[in-house]
Length: 439
Ligand SMILES: NC(=O)c1ccc[n+]([C@@H]2O[C@H](COP(=O)([O-])OP(=O)(O)OC[C@H]3O[C@@H](n4cnc5c(N)ncnc54)[C@H](O)[C@@H]3O)[C@@H](O)[C@H]2O)c1
Image (cartoon, rainbow, N blue to C red):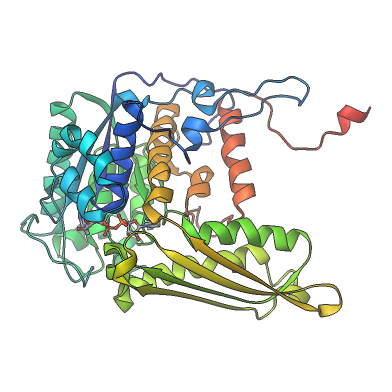
């Protein structure tokens, strides 16, 4: 049942626990950022929930509240963090290792970061070939591991006196998995967990544990994870919102900003070549061809959907799209992404666009983690369950209802997100028609 317009929204009272799977570059940059903002050391740049506004009614009405004043979101002061990782380092040590934030800033945040020690992970090297660690759970089978997570989630909630929880997967990208028969129903999924079947990846075990515990789940990596019928059904049955996949940062962010613009002017595309150099642990994991395949699928899909070659064959039929990621340690988290875009205009005359984006992956990803945590919590308080397509704004491969193609155009995604918020608060949706101003 879709949520009704102007529905009752439970207030965001008490503490919200944010459970992070993976305490690496993204997670520590997110936690340290929230701590720095709480202390007044920095601004929440890049976060729509903290800085974004929403226009209500007509342009002449001058009603433009901040999103966080328009819908009841958890306050940054009410967030509590927990994490799992295969390495035992505290959030402070992990942040130093990730090398995203300056040591001087981290030194000021040392006390709260040091208190966050990762719980033992559910991990199997068969799914992330380039990593091995010691902080890993033992269990009789995958269902047993899931039950251990469920106990830990409940214990975390009790110990930290949380009112509500959300879980975000910010752990390494797993090897490419195809949907399997075991993913079809909850029964077959649970049996496969008992049988230690290889179609059940660790990320699915976390997602299952979250959904069983009534905890909303967001998937920041391109892994299949919660994008399978068994877990979507479990989310719906347990009234839990879910979303994914793969945070939209860096090169794909640029692609989904630019491609809609080129298409809007009916400019054609011969090819789009994208390459990256990246030196963090994510880059190292993606150096494994099987993990890269998962990422590649996610990065490649966006142009096809935005440009619709079947609708515009003269412009977009057979364009060539290549994506490369090269592991290059000296750059650390400071990725460099190049795009060479071969376009054509009037009478078929060719032109080129070159982009050199010296970006910082985790700086772009951290505000996404924050927004997803707050919006998923809002969705749960509103009574929204199952796949949250309105959050596709944040993802490279947005999860949608079966047989529905995803919207990749970032401007459509943003309109969908804001219209969802207007709908929840009983405000008119904005169509941008605007004829009434000229009557
Ligand atoms: N930074 C970005 O812009 C961005 C964008 C899209 C997606 N992502 C994805 O987000 C994820 C995190 O990125 P990152 O840069 O923080 O990587 P990272 O390597 O710094 O951190 C990932 C952490 O996950 C841990 N881990 C791996 N498997 C685990 C498991 N089963 N349980 C618990 N912990 C586990 C690793 O030990 C590591 O500390 C990656 O999958 C990445 O592809 C990042």
